[in-house]
Image (cartoon, rainbow, N blue to C red; front, side, top):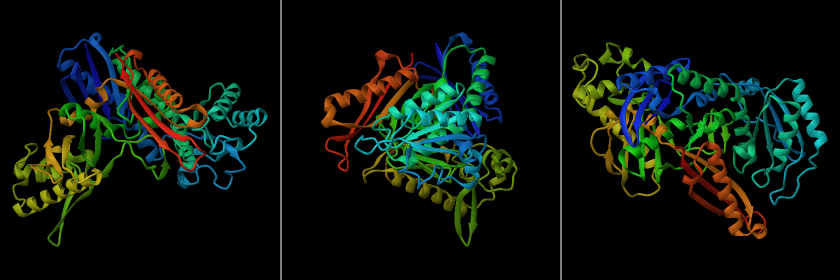
Length: 514
């Protein structure tokens, strides 16, 4: 039996055929405006090339940047009904306060701030009532708003008001797609609300993209289940993605990191993913990406939901090289997917990093004769600049001064040759150019919980057990087989500014899907 991993990027759609833990074949295809077509092109190629019957495909795993790109570009977003439980304590900071004017206009200022919420110690903040929520539900129905965001002050302590509010709204709006903040973000109200609104605005696109994927697999006559990769290196069933598209944000670099660890057999290392336009630096810890501990800015909006700890710089295979006053600059602009038309080696007029790599003899593609006039001095300066940019990025993601293994992946890994400062070893494993698709194919589903518990009320053992069970429950919902689930992360953070015995517990569970 085989499984297929696919990564749908902005420029390329990569597909890989896996048998057990063996990489059988990989292929890159141009991403199309209709993402399903790119998948059909890539997957059909590897199936035909290896003469594989679709009946022997056990599962398909897909990673995508469609949702990230849509939000950053302010395209294909829907109007959202924003219901906040926190009157009157939060009225001074209206919803979407740090959204751009254009983004706020697209999402629409359909805000309801009602009584409800909790104090930091779990006491009621306002008098939540069924009558007030029912009134809001009817007003939402009159405005014909389908995508609804519900956020409650300190819902990570107690999610009950969000659940009860969603239930009433659903009764009056049966077709509504509702996002509750306790399922998305963490402690920190404005950032958590932002993430929830963000998720709701992508609701229609999520349905369209998942349907496109399903149609593509149907056309390929693949009847096996398919999963979508999350940004923590695990998978979730396609139907869950319809409700939580933001959990796929940054899944592309995450897939590359997972794939890099798998290909190199390194569980703890720095991963440098060099694409056509950017280079992403990240850290894998026990085979999974290190998570960011600070709020993450996406398209100018601060959020606090789970995201990998990444640093990106404008360096890639299509980065433009300029020489001015005997100084060389690399990027941050790039010819991107037009590399095969604009780079010198393909008959274009733009000097890129790929031209330098071919001219130096470190790579062999395109027409080397077209770069034979590049001076050795310019080649040396450009290579030194590229190397310095990579070394600086490695230094920024390290937590201490010790040298660590560095894994290079992505089509642009050919830009680096030789040793790097800060690296105990530099690895470019086989199939590194499709590491993102390989990462998507690594078949584990996951679930996590990040919540505040009171040890003085529940006790430490019961609190930890409750957090573990919640994480396991979410892993089951994501598609994991119960007997294979294990807890891979458990973190306790005492909160000294809260009442005695308050502790924030983060638990993460993963399990196999077949």
